[in-house]
Amino acid sequence: MATGTGGRHASVERLTVLYDAQCPLCFHLRQWLVKQRQLVPLDLVPAASEEARRRFPGLDHAGTLDEITVIGDRGQIYRGTSAWIVCLWALADHRPRSHWLTTPAGRPFARATVLAAAKYRSLTATPCGGGDGDGACTAPGSGD
Image (cartoon, rainbow, N blue to C red; front, side):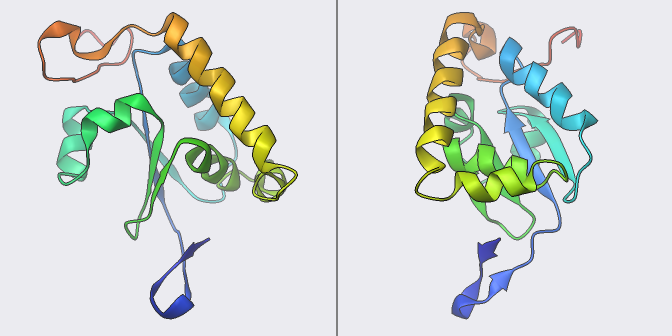
């Protein structure tokens, strides 16, 4: 899926999805992803969490709270619309749709879907970090 050095394709064997655990929509989509048959395993990690910072120390973690970020096991970084598409690509039942979403006909649909989700998220999500400046999020009901 991702292009490696010299124009060769780097095989993606695992993806990490950084999602906003304080966002009801994001948390729902996380639960949905977990239930899907995965062709490429997905690790779902709260954005800006201690685990995310440990796994990806050089990443702009504040930015991962603004939009979904997916990281491939070979260092590929996907954000926004591309991140949603790569998540679908990892799923057995949705891979054909992901390919269509990358076409000139499908890309506007993918972008509109991401924009609609962002609008919904802006109306329903609780800001991360609770004002203490660390930006860390916890999953609802995690007790943190």
